[in-house]
Amino acid sequence: MAAHAFQARAQPAHQLHLTSRRRHGLSSFRALASRDERGHAGARAQLQYVQKDESCAVQSCGSLSLCHLVVRKADATEQQPVEKCAFRAAVAMWRVTLFVASPNSRFLSPHHLHPNDCRDERGVGTMSSALRFVVHGLLATLLYTAYRFYTPDTGSVLDHPSSGSLGSGVVLSDGRQSLHRRTVAVADLHGDLQHALNVLSMASLISGSGDSIAWTGGHDVLVSTGDIVDRGDDTIALYRLFQTLRSQAATAGGKVVNLKGNHELMNALGDWRYVTEGDVKSFGGVQARREAMSVHGWIGKEWLEHYNVTAVVPLLPTDHPALPKGYTPPKASFVHGGITPLYAARGVDAINTIGKSLLHKALSSTSHSWLPPDVTPEERELWSENGPLWYRGYATNPPEEACPDADAARASLGVQQLIMGHTPHFDGFVSRCNDSVLLIDTGISRAYGGEQSALIIDTDLTPFPDHKGQWIEEQTLTALYKGRKPKILTSSKRHIHL
Image 1 (cartoon, rainbow, N blue to C red):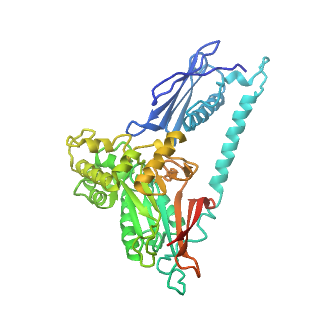
Image 2 (cartoon, rainbow, N blue to C red):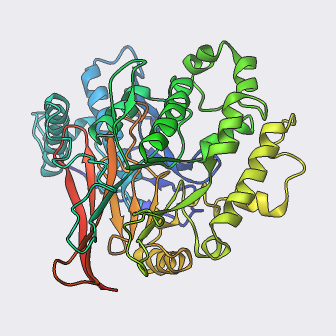
């Protein structure tokens, strides 16, 4: 089997060409890691394959989550089996997936498969070691996918669901009381009501079905990191769901925190590239949808009143009467994209003020320009690739860059963890920088086909018996995935003397 060397030339960050030259004939294999919705590095890949001297032509295009293949006979008079074309297409798609998903964005195989590579000099079928590796990898992937698909949905729910234990913990003889609260975070629901209900149910936050969904989370806190809209048909149902849960949680002593993602702003600005036909129909047409997402519409008002850019959430309530004097509960930062040290130094209130002003202008504007003409430099910068709605540095930068930035941002915000969505990792949460950075977008929506997931942060404060002024603070971060057992990401314990 002839080896074909691939050469990677220095290209701009948004485009990388890889070219293969064969001694007999010329073929080209071009992979483009194109930019995503707003033109930032990320989500889509195109594959163009042109074989000029052979009878198979394969083209593939799409995204990380939605790829389709077009396999055709280049010359109908040739007798080459079409299965061979299909096989080459499958291998090419597998390899471009590896290319895009690779952390270093490098092509992982040095060989280009030719239809005749599986034949020896006599034309008898043989299989090289490289081809065996490819076939075995495809088979393993297929078997794993089938296993995950047919595995019953058992073991997803935590053994310790919400107890609403604030105010009802163990009380010692000296009057001190233990406290416990769960904070649940979900990311990027993207128009999929059923998967959202699955996630909230397995996190023990809701019960019921249809129109009788009820909050069962007690004193728990639910944080949604944005991108509820686009890619699916259930925009109305999802925003109505969060309206209902916000009210019910407040009555029960809990809380629902909603953040806006880049897709909320895109829809406010009139960028509907990722809106589905079914979603438009659910509103009753384009005009009705525009009105709902205007400054006077019900979704526009919902965004302005209840959806911030970022939030710092205390993991125990700061005003609870049982909280010991002098104790400050731990906090976590939540945002859709990421907060750079520069934005963290400005503070949460400043970020949210700029974000609300930009949103109001977007909802009010009748201009068809990318941004309303009256935006300020601060608002334009917020909407840039380094702004908190788009920033991907904590997901893509190497640790020597990402971790010092994370430490600086955490120090400015006064938090233990930076938690964000936006950059999907379809196999599960990604923890970086000694568990101080958590990337929780797993492609929950069926548009992506990733993991249905929720992050659970359990925080306990327990008094030491017979040692007045001494407490134990415990924190456990757990990943919940549908159909899999809960996975503890990290846990910590510290003794507190007050």
